[in-house]
Image (cartoon, rainbow, N blue to C red; front, top):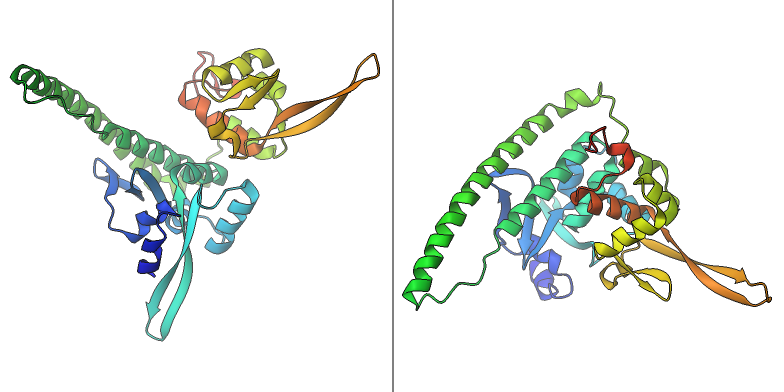
Length: 303
């Protein structure tokens, strides 16, 4: 089975995280759930995530329902492969799923509990750690003056990184302690209402006007905001997602027939955001410090 998967890694690169001995990603020694890497792609084992989330559903039903309901795409959001488990009386074949980090974070949000939110925060910290580990191109060390300046600059950067890593380690340790005591708290805890809770209740598509109101903005200002952040652009008076977002299932376009005073009819396409698209915008804007009204306090900050 391993030989078969290795031959097909070009078609499903995320599978490499579960076939080859790739470098395991940890954040300063703290590991809530395994995130493995191959060729710059981070992957999470769905079965382990299901266990850590504490779902009461059977794993096979849980992952199948999530994929079908929320429109996840194989070989884009996840890859599946068979794994043979040897037993005394023979062997059993099970299906495993390698999830992209984006899909894993979305599954945590969909679970709609404190454990899911905590694990999602952990995944975000893992992404930050990976970005910090990126190695820049080296200067020309054949020039003594450039080499000396480069070593001095690197020493200063290392000092800054040491302080930042220490702070991250303390924050992750604190998050771990919160998770340990979570099972006892969930039964008595009454969570605050969040924009995520509102989105979970509304599974229908939404027009830009209602979404803009959620952020205390006009439709024009909200469209301009999404344009400035590289999400959409205007084509013939119609807002259209940029290419990297087109096949994600974030929007639906519905044709609307307009009858003019002279009796002529034209067709205009009305763009509506899906629940998956609203999840994406919520997470994207939140990371930019832009929160919906329901999650702002009197100082304009999150709860």
